Image 1 (cartoon, helix red, strand yellow):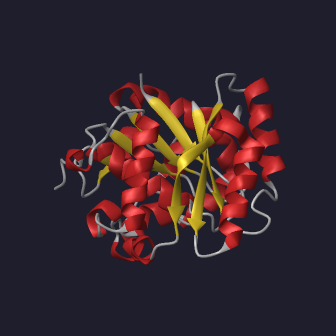
Image 2 (cartoon, rainbow, N blue to C red; image 1 turned 90 degrees about the vertical axis):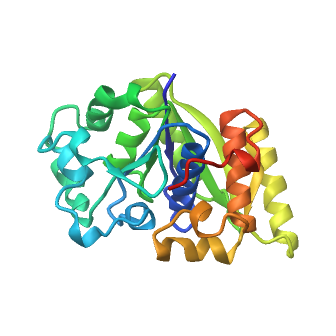
Length: 263
């Protein structure tokens, strides 16, 4: 069955887009046909996949407003089986324009439905807010990955996100579940990182991924070159941790030698 997973946290700077790009890339490398939908007006997932935002004529903005067919906006990436629906800064306007539409919270789910069965995974990179775009992502998703940075106040603000997820589950998307909590930007040289990991694992019990994403310069550099980590430096620690995360999501033993199908 195809799976739609949104990557969501209203707090910025937690590795949300890095996670969306890299799990999409590794899922595609493991022969899972994958679509990444960028609904963040910052469009960082778009540029991080090597798409020049300045030359994009149409984006997810046009799809949400009913001006374009989603099938016409799928762009290939440098990895076979990995496509992206780009975003654009004008998506900011959709926050206002969607409100006036009937069932505005359902627009993304409606436009995904005709293409859902064409993919094994659809990953949605949502904006760092709990506005209408994030609500659309959650309504369209089967589950949500929540990245949490290993820092003081790691759990701050998460109550609002968890309440939003519960409200959407009760009223708009009964099947919505937490796919997993992902600890990011860990620096194991500090006691703080281990304290945060223990706190988050205690708070969320069995929902926390075993994989912890470290601070890694190669992960930080890759978006500037428009590449997922698997293409920029697959041997880096950050890249290997996203490979491990993909194993957890797939629930199978994906070996390093299975990372194939690269152009």
